[in-house]
Amino acid sequence: MPQSTTEQNQGKSKKEQTTKQEANDERTQKTSSTQESAPKAALHHDCITTLVATLNMPPYSILICMLIYGCLLYASIQWSWIYLRTLLLLYMLHAVLLDRTAQATTKPKWVQRLQPKCNKNVFFRLTAKYFSCKLHPTSQKLDPDQSYLFAYHPHGIIGMGASLALATDASGFSTTFPGIRRSGVTLNVAFRVPFFKDWLLMNGFCSASKPTLLSRLLSSESIVLVPGGAAEALHCKPKTMRLTIRNRKGFIKLALETKAAIVPCIGFGENDIFDTIYLGDEKSGAEKSWLNPRNFLWKLQRTLYKTFSFSTPLWTHPIPIPHPIDVVVGEPIHFSGKMDQHSIDECHAQYLKALQDLYDEHKAKYGYEHVPLELL
Image (tube, rainbow, N blue to C red; front, side):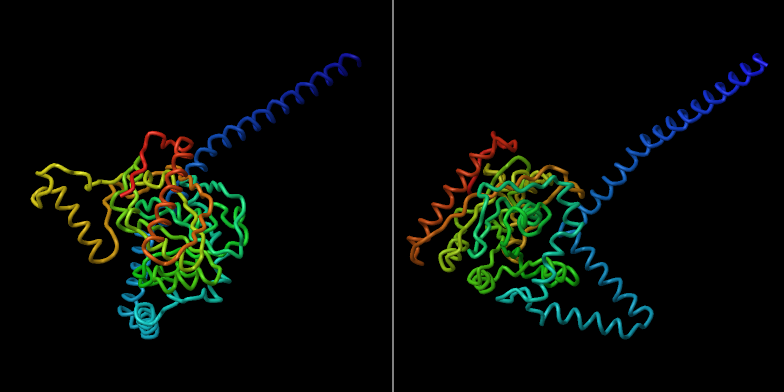
C-alpha cells in the first residue's frame, strides 16, 4: 500500500509538471506571436498614417475631389442617370458662379456649428502625428474678445504647419488658446474645386479677399494668414528660411485698420517636408539667359505665379518627408498709428524686428542654429 500510494503521488506530480510545462509553452508561443505581430501592426498603422498625411496635401486632395466629380459625371452620362447628372451640373454651376460663402463678411451659422468638430477630425490628427507637428506658445493667454492676425512663416510648399497647428485643432490650438475663434485664409480659386471647397468651408477657411478679412477682424474673430503667399513657396528648400516679407505690408494695413494684434508664428521644419528643385539662386551672367534650362524654368514659374496667383514649386518625391514641424507662436504685437505710409512703414519695421528676435531665440532648439533668416 505505501508503495502504490507513492507511485500515485509521483504520477500526479509528473502530470502536474507536464501540465505546467504545456501552459508555459503556450504562454511563450502567445508572447512570441504577439511580438511578431506587433511590428506588423506598427507597420500597418504607419502605412495608414503615411497614406492619410499624403492625401491630406492640398494638391492631392484637389486631384481626388476632381476625379470623384469626374467619375460621378461620367457614370451619370454612361448609364443615363438624368437626376444625378442634373444635380452634378447644378452643383458645379453653384460652386463656380453663385456660391459666395467663402467671401461672407461673417462666418455662417452652419460653419460655426461644424468647424469645432471638423477641426478635430482623424485626418488632421493623423497628419499631425505623421509630421510630429507641435504648437509652442510663448504667450500663455490670449484675450478671446480681441481679434488676432496669426502671421505664419514660411509658406513652404503648402503651409502645413499653419493648417495643422493654427487653423485646425490637430495640435491642440483650442486647448492652448481657449475661446479664440479663427478662420484659415486661402486663395479664392480653392473654393471653385468641387467637394474640396465644401471641405474648406466646414473647417472654417475663408477667402483672402480684403472685405472678408476686414469684416472678420472687426467682429472680434481672428484669422490665420501666410503673408509670404505663393511667391514665398517658390523659395522653399530644406534647411533654409527665405521669407518674402520686405514688401508685404497688406497685413500691417489690416491690423492698423481693425486694431487687431499681429501674432508672429514660425514653423521650424515647414521647408523640410519636401525636397525641391530650387531655381531662384542662380546669379551668373550665363544663368540669366532664357536658353539656360534652370533659368527658363524659374522664369516660367514666376510667369505662372503672376498670371494665375498660385505658384508651381517643383518637389522631387510624391510622399512628404515625416520631418517634425514645430510652430512657435510669438507675443502679440499691438500697433497704434495713422493709416499713412510713414506709420505703415514703422509698424512693418517693428514687425520684422519682432520676427527676427523670435527666430533668433528659438532657432537652436529646432535645429536651425546655422540657418540664417533671409528676408526677401
